[in-house]
Length: 304
Ligand SMILES: [Zn+2]
Image (cartoon, rainbow, N blue to C red; front, side, top):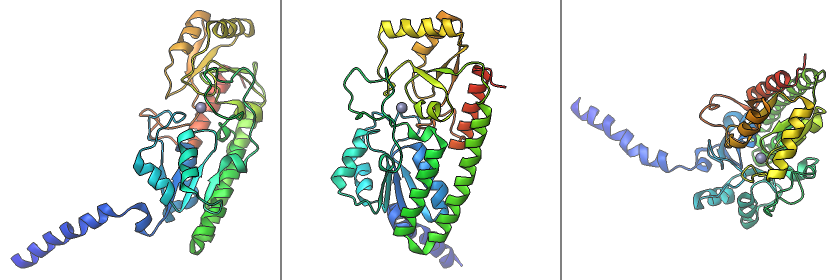
């Protein structure tokens, strides 16, 4: 008996190092590397239990100026599928280029979607190289539908035995995203005001899809601060249009938005660009956050 117990005690000790060393690639599942939260979410929904998804942007981190650790660069090299968007995170663009990955196992959302040029007035003054494109495609749910379908196609190609499951998962996700899109269309069709003042220029795709006008406080990159004259313009606009709400976000300091709100008597509220989850939103998903964004927009702009 004693001998058996000793044996039982030893077995896990022997098995443990192997389990710890096993990379995502070795556990039998298809490995997907996604560059930030919203894309990782799509990959998880479509891949289900047959994939392991690694998100390059850790929770609570602002993704624009992401820097990759050597281990993450290696993951970009080794993953069965990589999902990213060119011109959003320079470090990821560089890692994908260096890895010399093929189009067969790499999804660049920039190549899948109709990308909009940077909104006028939202260009970064400090010369950050984003290309001339606005990367915030995922805030239009119809773009997420196209990404879901691209992920399904690629996963089916690299892991044919589970192709049917990927297609079924993608169909289910497309249905949920279609419902979300219909809700946003209906919910934002009758608003008293259609202008939204946002923390950084993340909501052009949402504005474009649902006929809103975005006035961003910062440019494409949330770390770029506006000039005093830009601030003056925004403050005047808030007063003249009777804007009730200045939108802030989870991963960026609300200081400037709060200042504008105080000066104009508007209130500050969170509109989430869903670039990453924070401690406050750890239990949320792309879908729940978009539904919250809808409710926030409806309240701010008196949409009944
Ligand atoms: Zn952004």
